[in-house]
Length: 313
Image (cartoon, rainbow, N blue to C red):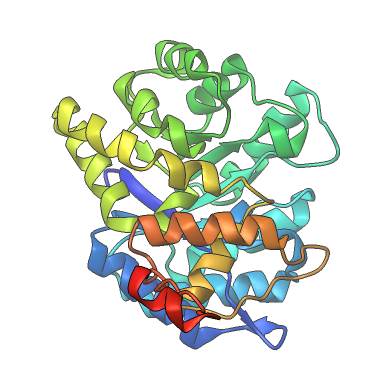
Protein backbone atom coordinates (compact mmCIF):
# COMPACT_ATOMS: atom_id res chain seq x y z
CA UNK A 1 0.00 0.00 0.00
CA UNK A 2 2.86 2.37 0.80
CA UNK A 3 3.96 2.12 -2.85
CA UNK A 4 1.06 4.28 -3.98
CA UNK A 5 1.89 7.95 -3.57
CA UNK A 6 3.19 10.91 -5.53
CA UNK A 7 2.95 11.17 -9.30
CA UNK A 8 1.53 8.00 -10.84
CA UNK A 9 1.54 8.83 -14.53
CA UNK A 10 -1.40 7.69 -16.70
CA UNK A 11 0.42 6.87 -19.90
CA UNK A 12 -1.02 7.29 -23.36
CA UNK A 13 -1.27 4.12 -25.43
CA UNK A 14 1.04 4.54 -28.44
CA UNK A 15 -0.13 3.12 -31.76
CA UNK A 16 1.68 2.48 -35.02
CA UNK A 17 -0.24 1.37 -38.08
CA UNK A 18 -3.21 0.64 -35.86
CA UNK A 19 -1.33 -1.61 -33.42
CA UNK A 20 0.13 -0.99 -29.96
CA UNK A 21 3.67 0.29 -30.47
CA UNK A 22 5.96 -1.60 -28.10
CA UNK A 23 9.07 0.44 -28.93
CA UNK A 24 7.24 3.71 -28.25
CA UNK A 25 5.87 2.34 -24.98
CA UNK A 26 9.42 1.55 -23.91
CA UNK A 27 10.52 5.10 -24.73
CA UNK A 28 7.64 6.55 -22.70
CA UNK A 29 8.34 4.34 -19.69
CA UNK A 30 12.09 4.97 -19.67
CA UNK A 31 11.51 8.72 -19.88
CA UNK A 32 9.13 8.61 -16.93
CA UNK A 33 11.40 6.55 -14.72
CA UNK A 34 14.41 8.74 -15.53
CA UNK A 35 12.37 11.82 -14.60
CA UNK A 36 11.54 10.46 -11.15
CA UNK A 37 7.87 9.57 -11.51
CA UNK A 38 6.67 7.62 -8.47
CA UNK A 39 4.61 5.11 -10.46
CA UNK A 40 2.93 4.44 -13.78
CA UNK A 41 -0.54 3.51 -14.94
CA UNK A 42 -1.79 2.08 -18.23
CA UNK A 43 -5.30 1.46 -19.47
CA UNK A 44 -6.90 4.48 -17.82
CA UNK A 45 -8.87 7.22 -19.57
CA UNK A 46 -5.73 8.74 -21.12
CA UNK A 47 -4.84 5.33 -22.57
CA UNK A 48 -8.00 5.05 -24.73
CA UNK A 49 -9.21 1.81 -23.09
CA UNK A 50 -12.63 2.02 -24.71
CA UNK A 51 -11.07 1.42 -28.12
CA UNK A 52 -8.91 -1.52 -27.02
CA UNK A 53 -10.04 -5.14 -27.07
CA UNK A 54 -9.81 -7.17 -23.87
CA UNK A 55 -6.78 -8.98 -25.25
CA UNK A 56 -5.10 -5.68 -26.13
CA UNK A 57 -5.75 -4.34 -22.65
CA UNK A 58 -4.20 -7.42 -21.08
CA UNK A 59 -1.26 -7.25 -23.51
CA UNK A 60 -0.70 -3.60 -22.58
CA UNK A 61 -0.59 -4.40 -18.86
CA UNK A 62 1.79 -7.32 -19.34
CA UNK A 63 4.00 -5.24 -21.63
CA UNK A 64 4.20 -2.43 -19.06
CA UNK A 65 5.13 -4.89 -16.29
CA UNK A 66 7.86 -6.33 -18.52
CA UNK A 67 9.29 -2.92 -19.42
CA UNK A 68 9.09 -1.41 -15.92
CA UNK A 69 11.03 -4.35 -14.43
CA UNK A 70 9.88 -3.59 -10.90
CA UNK A 71 11.51 -0.15 -10.77
CA UNK A 72 8.25 1.65 -9.95
CA UNK A 73 4.77 0.28 -9.16
CA UNK A 74 2.27 -0.21 -11.97
CA UNK A 75 -1.36 0.68 -11.26
CA UNK A 76 -3.24 -1.10 -14.03
CA UNK A 77 -6.47 0.34 -15.38
CA UNK A 78 -8.80 -2.66 -15.38
CA UNK A 79 -12.33 -1.27 -15.23
CA UNK A 80 -14.98 -1.61 -17.93
CA UNK A 81 -18.74 -1.17 -17.96
CA UNK A 82 -19.15 -4.96 -17.57
CA UNK A 83 -18.40 -6.88 -14.38
CA UNK A 84 -17.19 -10.05 -16.10
CA UNK A 85 -14.69 -8.13 -18.23
CA UNK A 86 -13.50 -6.09 -15.25
CA UNK A 87 -12.94 -9.27 -13.26
CA UNK A 88 -11.03 -10.87 -16.14
CA UNK A 89 -8.66 -7.94 -16.62
CA UNK A 90 -8.17 -7.36 -12.89
CA UNK A 91 -7.30 -11.00 -12.22
CA UNK A 92 -4.91 -10.90 -15.16
CA UNK A 93 -3.22 -7.73 -13.86
CA UNK A 94 -2.60 -9.40 -10.51
CA UNK A 95 -1.31 -12.56 -12.18
CA UNK A 96 1.30 -10.78 -14.34
CA UNK A 97 2.68 -8.61 -11.55
CA UNK A 98 0.93 -5.23 -11.49
CA UNK A 99 1.05 -3.57 -8.07
CA UNK A 100 -2.66 -2.76 -8.03
CA UNK A 101 -5.72 -1.98 -10.13
CA UNK A 102 -7.46 1.28 -10.95
CA UNK A 103 -11.15 0.45 -11.45
CA UNK A 104 -13.32 3.07 -13.11
CA UNK A 105 -16.99 3.68 -12.35
CA UNK A 106 -18.94 1.70 -14.98
CA UNK A 107 -19.68 4.29 -17.65
CA UNK A 108 -22.79 4.88 -19.76
CA UNK A 109 -25.01 2.76 -17.48
CA UNK A 110 -25.34 5.36 -14.68
CA UNK A 111 -25.77 2.82 -11.84
CA UNK A 112 -27.20 3.82 -8.47
CA UNK A 113 -25.05 3.77 -5.33
CA UNK A 114 -26.08 0.26 -4.26
CA UNK A 115 -25.16 -0.98 -7.73
CA UNK A 116 -21.77 0.69 -7.47
CA UNK A 117 -21.19 -0.83 -4.04
CA UNK A 118 -21.96 -4.31 -5.29
CA UNK A 119 -19.90 -3.89 -8.47
CA UNK A 120 -16.75 -2.71 -6.71
CA UNK A 121 -17.31 -5.14 -3.86
CA UNK A 122 -17.37 -8.11 -6.21
CA UNK A 123 -14.16 -6.93 -7.88
CA UNK A 124 -12.46 -6.57 -4.48
CA UNK A 125 -13.64 -10.02 -3.37
CA UNK A 126 -12.29 -11.60 -6.56
CA UNK A 127 -8.73 -10.42 -5.79
CA UNK A 128 -8.62 -10.13 -1.98
CA UNK A 129 -4.84 -9.66 -1.78
CA UNK A 130 -4.66 -7.12 -4.60
CA UNK A 131 -4.90 -3.37 -3.89
CA UNK A 132 -7.83 -1.63 -5.59
CA UNK A 133 -8.10 2.11 -6.26
CA UNK A 134 -11.60 3.30 -7.14
CA UNK A 135 -11.84 5.75 -10.04
CA UNK A 136 -14.41 8.48 -9.54
CA UNK A 137 -14.89 10.39 -12.81
CA UNK A 138 -18.46 11.70 -13.00
CA UNK A 139 -17.79 13.71 -16.16
CA UNK A 140 -17.18 10.55 -18.18
CA UNK A 141 -19.14 7.97 -16.21
CA UNK A 142 -22.24 10.10 -15.69
CA UNK A 143 -22.45 9.19 -11.99
CA UNK A 144 -20.39 9.96 -8.89
CA UNK A 145 -19.19 7.52 -6.26
CA UNK A 146 -20.71 9.20 -3.22
CA UNK A 147 -18.52 9.72 -0.16
CA UNK A 148 -20.71 7.37 1.85
CA UNK A 149 -20.38 4.63 -0.78
CA UNK A 150 -16.59 4.94 -0.97
CA UNK A 151 -16.34 4.88 2.84
CA UNK A 152 -18.60 1.82 3.01
CA UNK A 153 -16.46 0.03 0.43
CA UNK A 154 -13.28 0.90 2.30
CA UNK A 155 -14.80 -0.40 5.55
CA UNK A 156 -16.07 -3.69 4.07
CA UNK A 157 -13.19 -4.56 1.72
CA UNK A 158 -9.67 -4.05 3.13
CA UNK A 159 -8.00 -4.22 -0.28
CA UNK A 160 -9.92 -1.12 -1.49
CA UNK A 161 -7.17 1.24 -0.41
CA UNK A 162 -7.87 4.47 -2.25
CA UNK A 163 -9.72 6.56 -4.82
CA UNK A 164 -8.79 8.68 -7.81
CA UNK A 165 -10.94 11.80 -7.79
CA UNK A 166 -11.46 13.42 -11.21
CA UNK A 167 -13.70 16.33 -10.31
CA UNK A 168 -13.35 20.00 -9.39
CA UNK A 169 -15.04 19.29 -6.05
CA UNK A 170 -12.11 19.65 -3.64
CA UNK A 171 -14.50 19.54 -0.67
CA UNK A 172 -15.21 15.91 -1.64
CA UNK A 173 -11.62 15.02 -0.71
CA UNK A 174 -11.96 16.46 2.79
CA UNK A 175 -15.30 14.77 3.34
CA UNK A 176 -13.99 11.46 2.04
CA UNK A 177 -10.93 11.51 4.29
CA UNK A 178 -13.05 12.53 7.28
CA UNK A 179 -15.55 9.72 6.61
CA UNK A 180 -13.34 6.92 5.28
CA UNK A 181 -10.27 7.70 7.36
CA UNK A 182 -7.29 9.94 6.87
CA UNK A 183 -5.17 6.98 5.76
CA UNK A 184 -7.42 6.31 2.74
CA UNK A 185 -5.24 7.06 -0.27
CA UNK A 186 -6.81 9.77 -2.40
CA UNK A 187 -5.28 10.74 -5.74
CA UNK A 188 -6.13 13.82 -7.72
CA UNK A 189 -7.35 13.08 -11.22
CA UNK A 190 -7.85 16.66 -12.40
CA UNK A 191 -4.48 18.09 -13.35
CA UNK A 192 -4.69 21.69 -12.11
CA UNK A 193 -6.06 20.63 -8.71
CA UNK A 194 -3.23 18.31 -7.71
CA UNK A 195 -1.62 20.79 -5.31
CA UNK A 196 -4.89 21.96 -3.67
CA UNK A 197 -6.10 18.38 -3.18
CA UNK A 198 -2.77 17.29 -1.73
CA UNK A 199 -2.89 20.22 0.68
CA UNK A 200 -6.05 18.77 2.22
CA UNK A 201 -4.76 15.21 2.38
CA UNK A 202 -4.50 13.58 -1.05
CA UNK A 203 -1.29 11.54 -1.35
CA UNK A 204 -0.59 12.22 -5.00
CA UNK A 205 -1.90 12.56 -8.50
CA UNK A 206 -2.73 10.43 -11.51
CA UNK A 207 -2.53 13.35 -13.89
CA UNK A 208 -2.10 13.35 -17.67
CA UNK A 209 0.14 16.45 -17.62
CA UNK A 210 2.99 14.27 -16.39
CA UNK A 211 3.15 12.75 -19.88
CA UNK A 212 4.62 16.14 -20.85
CA UNK A 213 6.18 17.32 -17.60
CA UNK A 214 7.11 14.20 -15.61
CA UNK A 215 9.92 15.71 -13.56
CA UNK A 216 8.03 18.85 -12.56
CA UNK A 217 4.89 16.90 -11.63
CA UNK A 218 6.84 14.40 -9.54
CA UNK A 219 8.78 17.17 -7.83
CA UNK A 220 5.60 19.09 -6.97
CA UNK A 221 4.09 15.96 -5.42
CA UNK A 222 7.25 15.11 -3.48
CA UNK A 223 7.64 18.64 -2.14
CA UNK A 224 4.02 18.68 -1.01
CA UNK A 225 4.38 15.31 0.70
CA UNK A 226 7.41 16.73 2.54
CA UNK A 227 5.48 19.82 3.64
CA UNK A 228 7.49 22.19 1.44
CA UNK A 229 4.40 23.99 0.28
CA UNK A 230 5.91 27.22 -1.02
CA UNK A 231 8.28 25.40 -3.35
CA UNK A 232 5.47 23.13 -4.49
CA UNK A 233 3.25 26.16 -5.09
CA UNK A 234 5.76 27.57 -7.57
CA UNK A 235 5.61 24.34 -9.57
CA UNK A 236 1.81 24.39 -9.37
CA UNK A 237 1.73 27.76 -11.11
CA UNK A 238 4.49 26.75 -13.52
CA UNK A 239 2.39 23.89 -14.86
CA UNK A 240 -0.96 25.65 -15.22
CA UNK A 241 -0.80 26.26 -18.97
CA UNK A 242 0.26 22.68 -19.62
CA UNK A 243 -2.64 21.51 -17.45
CA UNK A 244 -5.06 23.61 -19.47
CA UNK A 245 -3.63 22.41 -22.78
CA UNK A 246 -4.59 18.80 -22.01
CA UNK A 247 -8.20 19.85 -22.50
CA UNK A 248 -7.90 22.13 -25.54
CA UNK A 249 -9.25 19.08 -27.32
CA UNK A 250 -10.37 15.65 -26.12
CA UNK A 251 -7.69 13.92 -24.05
CA UNK A 252 -5.36 12.35 -25.28
CA UNK A 253 -5.40 14.19 -28.64
CA UNK A 254 -3.30 17.16 -27.41
CA UNK A 255 -0.94 14.84 -25.54
CA UNK A 256 -0.25 12.63 -28.53
CA UNK A 257 0.12 15.61 -30.83
CA UNK A 258 2.92 17.10 -28.74
CA UNK A 259 4.54 13.76 -27.88
CA UNK A 260 4.74 13.02 -31.60
CA UNK A 261 6.58 16.30 -32.17
CA UNK A 262 8.96 15.21 -29.40
CA UNK A 263 9.72 12.03 -31.37
CA UNK A 264 8.31 9.71 -28.71
CA UNK A 265 5.42 8.18 -30.66
CA UNK A 266 3.34 8.36 -33.81
CA UNK A 267 0.49 10.88 -33.96
CA UNK A 268 -2.11 8.16 -34.05
CA UNK A 269 -5.41 7.50 -32.31
CA UNK A 270 -8.19 4.97 -32.48
CA UNK A 271 -11.52 6.03 -34.00
CA UNK A 272 -13.68 7.86 -33.13
CA UNK A 273 -10.85 10.17 -31.99
CA UNK A 274 -9.19 12.18 -34.71
CA UNK A 275 -6.71 15.00 -35.34
CA UNK A 276 -7.29 18.38 -33.78
CA UNK A 277 -7.73 21.63 -35.70
CA UNK A 278 -4.85 23.66 -37.17
CA UNK A 279 -5.72 26.45 -34.71
CA UNK A 280 -5.34 24.17 -31.70
CA UNK A 281 -2.17 22.67 -33.13
CA UNK A 282 -0.72 26.17 -33.36
CA UNK A 283 -1.62 26.82 -29.70
CA UNK A 284 -0.12 23.49 -28.70
CA UNK A 285 3.08 24.27 -30.56
CA UNK A 286 3.44 27.61 -28.76
CA UNK A 287 2.81 25.89 -25.41
CA UNK A 288 5.30 23.11 -26.15
CA UNK A 289 7.95 25.62 -27.21
CA UNK A 290 7.42 27.69 -24.06
CA UNK A 291 8.07 24.62 -21.87
CA UNK A 292 11.08 23.56 -23.93
CA UNK A 293 9.41 20.33 -25.04
CA UNK A 294 10.24 21.12 -28.66
CA UNK A 295 12.70 23.62 -30.17
CA UNK A 296 11.42 27.03 -31.10
CA UNK A 297 11.13 27.58 -34.80
CA UNK A 298 13.46 30.27 -36.08
CA UNK A 299 11.55 33.15 -37.65
CA UNK A 300 11.98 33.44 -41.39
CA UNK A 301 13.94 36.52 -42.52
CA UNK A 302 11.84 39.14 -44.29
CA UNK A 303 11.57 38.82 -48.05
CA UNK A 304 12.98 41.91 -49.75
CA UNK A 305 11.38 42.98 -52.97
CA UNK A 306 13.26 46.28 -53.21
CA UNK A 307 17.07 46.21 -52.79
CA UNK A 308 16.87 49.71 -51.39
CA UNK A 309 15.10 48.32 -48.32
CA UNK A 310 18.14 46.28 -47.29
CA UNK A 311 19.77 48.96 -45.16
CA UNK A 312 16.62 49.26 -43.05
CA UNK A 313 16.22 45.53 -42.30
